[in-house]
Image (cartoon, rainbow over all chains, first blue to last red; front, top):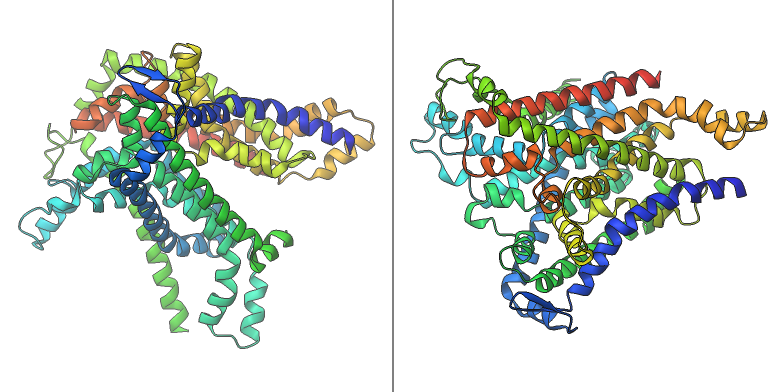
Amino acid sequence: MAATADRGFRLAAPVATVLIVGCVLPLAVLFVYSFFRVDFVAIVHDPSFKNYVRVANSPTYRGLIGQAILSGGIVAAVTAVIGYPVAWAIAKRVVFAKSACLTLLLIPLYTGDLVRIFAWRVVLGAEGVVNSFLMWTGLVREPIRALLFSPFATHVVLTYDYLPFMVMGLWLAFESLDDRLLEAARDLGARETAIFLRIVLPLTSPGLVAGALMVFVLVVGDHLTPQLVGGSSGITVISAINDLFGTAFDWPLGSAIASSLLLILGLMVTVAALAVARSTWGRAVLGGE
Amino acid sequence: MTRPCLARRMLWSWVGLVYAFMYLPVAVIALFSFNASKIVAFPLQGFTLDWYVKVLGDGRILGGLGVTFLVAIPTAIAATVLGAMAALALTRSKLKHPIAFAALLFLPFLVPKVILAVAQLIVLSEVGIGRGLTTIVIGQTLIILPFTTLVVASVLVRLDPRLEEAAADLGADGGQIFRRILFPLMKNGLTAAFFVAFVLSSSEYVVTSFVSGRTQPLSILVASDFRFDLSPSLDALAVLMVVANLAIVAVGELVRLAGRR
């Protein structure tokens, strides 16, 4: 046992060092910067809470953070509804070529952010696929301009981008769902809706929460999609941070917004993770493995 | 028996629709890359390969492709080696704080990329490190690490730990067990992780754009073009990138499947 503990440390230590130097340390420095201020073109190391006061008192930044969280929630919910039957079908109804089905779902992920966004602009544009089709069928006379450069477009593309993560999370939960539980319930006379609500849904909830968390975090962190297909609605909290570190040159304020956002995200992730671990079904699933 | 039949048909229609949704944009890009018109819009004007010829003859794009390879190969190697170490630590040994280690591993995935990138930017400017190839490789390795760890771990959890125990009982030391048992069995996972990392590296944009400086890989070069200009030659380039990525992923996946038997 001592040998494996020693080996574990020797394997984990270099990886942990890289992550601490490359990720934790920069985030800590970012946090420290959030207490500084800018004087013309210089950053003054004069700690105060001014930046946080500015963020808290600014309806713009508060609104942008709220909007990011709302978008994350919407897309997480939509991907859950779309992905749930797909994950079930892949886990329980596909007999052969199961991994091919999963890989096929993941392939669009490998095309890269910009290629996908570019493709959606072609699909949703005024002379794009959807509008051309609608005009060809005679359903509309004029192209629907609101399809592209609108919050609608942003949420369609975000759903598209992060659906595979939701399906992966759910698929893992369905794979560990024991079919004999459903058979037993059926033998005891349970209706299909009762089986779903009282067995399938509770037992796949950890996958649902894991998938929703991934989607939520990724949507909150995405600024390219809103910027490139959202039109005038494309300003996000992340693009605001981006601007403060670029043209607007106020690194301390940008750091304060980023730190606030990270704090909120961290709290939400922790609460969700604890909720899964604490609940009876969570314990049953996690402890049962 | 009519109801389960209907339910099944509805399920498969739904799955079909979702897959169609996932491939719609890819298909549209492919369609317009062969369209003989400068305007990316319907109706289609006829078949051409001109856009491919144009892209493949573009010196700027070929230069960017070269940089992409210079970045992607070391990134993929680093992310695979570190991912393998992390996966081995998590699945094949006792850690004092396994949950803390896992949380640390997935931190680069959970933190919004722009925030991570600006944080790295601050450190680079504080320490006075110039941006270039090295900073891109480090930045990308960090955000790709969670993915490679998962790929290698998915192979390791399927391996029977009794193989190693048997080897240890027969007197093999740690190094021998790794070289003669674990490594051959996880080799396919490593290959798959390398390919996944390569593809993710070549298509990464956000972190790269912050830490790249004047060294510009393909993903950065085409970004400025993508923003305002929807030209068919970019369509052709996107198709080539998708096909290349697909080929790399397919090879990785085949290797992994071959190893599972």
